[in-house]
Length: 169
Image: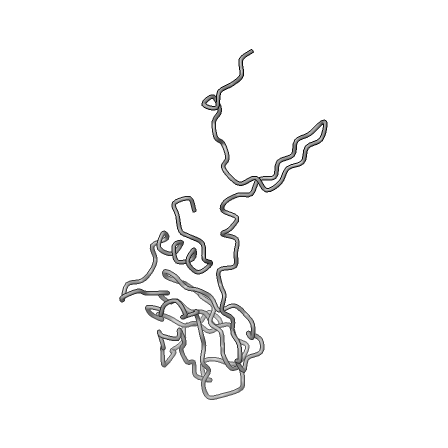
């Protein structure tokens, strides 16, 4: 029998050797998938110093592309004439538009859309503290254009978590 050449083998997996153990009977190899680095939490910013303690320390969502029924977070649940809601983290980009707002699934009129801060206001006639509010909106924009290209989104996510973007992931 001849010894096989390297070219006789086919690559079926590529990764990093994490650890191995060797006994008289077994060889156990633990590989680390290069994509594992993408498991880092992407979202970094949370709600802080808000009057609504139900959302304090919750993650503020990132928003690329067209979002349907995105969750809106009331910044203050104290009974008032109006309530301010936030729908996305704007530390990266401003959002492009707020299209429709729903309270418990029913479309309502909102006021004061602020695309720079991703906020809007609902009147107490349309919203009562504790009701579910969702939003149809267009997320992050750059120079007036909606960011919805998956490759651009992946590249931005890699930048957020300090991973060099390349063609492997």
